[in-house]
Image 1 (tube, rainbow over the protein chains, first blue to last red):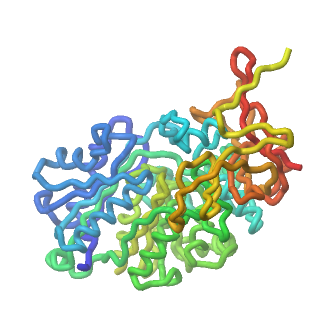
Image 2 (image 1 turned 180 degrees about the vertical axis):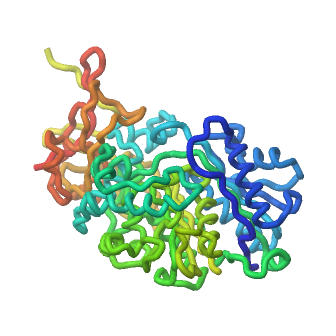
Image 3 (image 1 turned 30 degrees about the vertical axis):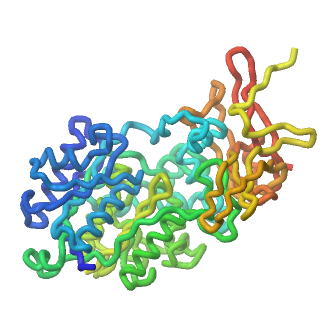
Amino acid sequence: MRDVAVLGVGMHPFGKFADKSVTDLCRDAVVAALADAGVQWRDIEAVAAASSRFSGGKGWGLNGNDVVEDMGSTGIPVYNMSAGCAAGGNAFNVGYALVAGGIYDTILVVGGEKMPKGFIQTSGVEEETDPEFLRQRCVGMPGPSFWALLCRQRMEEFGTTEEQLAKVAVKAHQVAVHNENARFRKEFTLEQVLGSNMVSDPLRLFEICPVSDGAAAVVICSAEKAKQFSSNPVWVAGSTVATMSFDDGLPRGLAGVVPSGKSFHSEASTAVERALAQAGAGPQDLDLVELQDNTVYYELAFPEDWGMCKPGEAEHLLETGETLPTGKMPINPSGGFLCFGEATTAMGVFQVCELTWQLRGEAGARQVPDAKLGLGQTLGLGGNGTAVVLKR
Amino acid sequence: MTTKRIPVIDGLFSDTADGTRLLGSRCASCNVPYFPKSSLCHNPDCTGSQMEDASFGPHGTVWSYSIQNYPPPPPARYDEPYKPYALGVVDLTDGLRVVGRMAVDDPESLKAGCKVELVSEPLCTEEDGTEVITWMFRPI
């Protein structure tokens, strides 16, 4: 395996852009990433792209082909990766593997999305053999209720309060004020978060990420190639993809087995564990984490699941400021999904952008001091999980 | 006149003389329960494939619960005007962890760890007055 460097990153700000197509958003991100890397479009040997269900891709998730046609068809191979909300992380992993394995020297990884308004709708499949259809028809359990069940379980196990849940959102907005790419750059008070409508009790509107339009792109290359462009690039220390295990404790359809232990998102834990092992690092070595905070719950539970702190300790770390960029366990210094909104398939690439800016020391007022090792993590429908560890 | 009742989906549950049961299957080799029925065992550590019909319930313990405060998108069904409902994840005594609505008037009374039993209750009503029934959990 060859060492792989992140040579350049670029992002289109997140928000709602009625006048732009997903291709417009991707183009901005790609052009920025190429410029940041100091390479030309002709230097890109292959594209690994996240497949979207919602926008572009000719209805087949061919989002990478859209990008190549837009930038100029050079005949390069395109890999369109589908993994639900983990597609961006999945595309990064495929790009990484192709460079590490010596197939290509320079690859563009891209994810872009324009999301329909409102909560993400179910697949539209109406077959009695489809577990998602059965769950919605027989019970009525849309996405946020899934998060609400996890969150309520934590509240009962550790005594997490509604105020503590709201403080995660307050903290996210506190840091996003400093991020020019974030959609919501306004501070929220505890009262404002607690005053927002209950969506799926115990979770309120401001404690759940909305959907957004946005795009992110990164140029990765071999160590040899990187030397031509940078004396001190950011390195990929680990990149993994995993799927959930059979004994996962969270039923994704109607039912599962009562688990012997506590494992609710085995796809995420497995991906993170393997990425850290690949990096030769432990969870305590991480200087920062960009994790998938679809809801405030994840920012409390995931660091514990992954061994970054003790079970039940996350609320204390939050309340003492340790999860801020200046704390000892910085979580989502970008502002995370809560402040960007989820442009679903772009998120894994978005995280690589933020980690890269942080590790270069270019993150301005949200900078994690002296950041050397950072983790990114996504999960998506189908029990897909991805993780990436970047180092300086 | 008795109200006509139909199950929301056929073959998922049945009412017996001593309560509601979920209709699934169990692997004869590794004992893993499946709901709904499965024609094969999906346990990666099991090489057997002989599945037996099994019914689950009626007793279990609440693992977690939530209230659905906003009307869910299709294909979920509910009567207008929308009334928030409670749902939960329940560990049945026969080893199945299953999702379902909670048959409670006051969701605030729910607690993780509380004992429940399976019941069949109306999910919604058709235009002709037919009640559409699903499985639910009622605290005992």
